[in-house]
Image 1 (cartoon, rainbow over the protein chains, first blue to last red):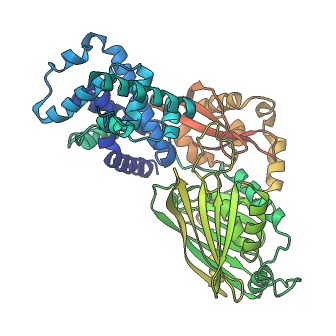
Image 2: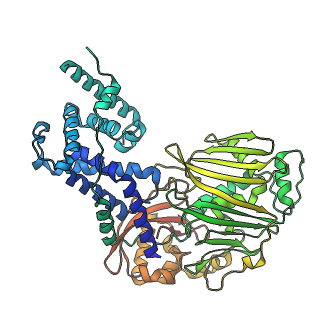
Image 3: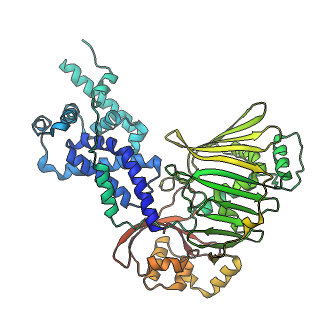
Length: 168
Length: 402
């Protein structure tokens, strides 16, 4: 019985990984900027999900659970990795593996734009633009009111527009 | 000078390339998961859903003004479509409904799981009031005297009084009152704001399309989407216009507004011949007696006082304290309904290392207590154990999640 349960849980996990791994990888990569760390974070989150008492098939909550977990892990990553932090301009000099050149360039390009925003605003922009989430989903993940998510996003976009227009 | 529109800005902020995780990421995670010492939840023994299903079934029964079963004579106007439905069912000798639901074969009848494969269920209802529901790994029947629920593979089950056992069918209780289903659905829709019901007709059929919001308190959403009642659903019931018979029904669960089929009917067979042999109980089952008579005896001989007047967390502490030495008298109270002989192998010598933060969720009338336990072999497991006050004993009892 126990074995059946475990096998069934592994199969559930396999399905979830198959469905979510690219999206979660993108989510993590766009926050940490390198494949190795992004995949470590994704792996840790999947393993925590598997080891937890969470019901793997609470589908509605699962997406939020995974995104929130990745988001938290990325925050932890930045807190712990202070010795590695470099500016966005300098970051371009950090070699990306050749196969990841394109995604690394995108990471640098977008994060350079977001660098003028507060952390809170930048994260909402990421969730909205990178991850295609709705405001009510963003609000749930960040545990803030939906109206706050909307207003932060609106201010962020207005600020970025102004910056770009001034530089045209 | 061209101004950047918001959509252009959003496009600028959207990555313009595909992101793919490494080919071996899935394999790495699965290998690591396999190596992890996860003992997992055991079968969800007794149903922590029983209570909610009983509530729902009770609500249904209360709402039904005219309760007609096969063989009974209806007393109301024949030109009413409800009357025809009830009259139709009163004339059949019995019926079977075969339907598929996404769930686990041995879990509670109310348990649904949108990511699982469909499990075939067969409900049989006889004119004399006997019924049976079979979902493969879990079976229940009323044989005219007692209600029985059992797990064929695990070879154990419960024997209950007929009066106490009406909740065991949980969300499928309504299928025992099929003649009144349409009437109940309409009445229920009128009395619940979060439940809308639209009727459409063709020359031959009446269809009730229902949208129901998840019921329950989801400040903690642990039980959200784990039963039909605790999910946002879209339900469709089709009745024959000619004789009122239920022709089919299907239920979709709505995840972020996107429907996912959770239950669909294969066949409804009216006037089905239900063989007597279907009601013969298997001989190999170890039955736990939950009849009122037996519970009264238990109350006289067992230390029930130690599980009254305390918090659920304290009850959990005492339960694991009793497991250390396998204090069977105490465990018979707090684990009433569990097959102790089968649980002993896993839980004897087990200790509680963390416990607290009991919470309620959804429609469950008990509480969930997060516990971290350490087994005799040193391995650990996190559980959310359902505890509720047992009405018969008046004590806390573990009700699921172990």
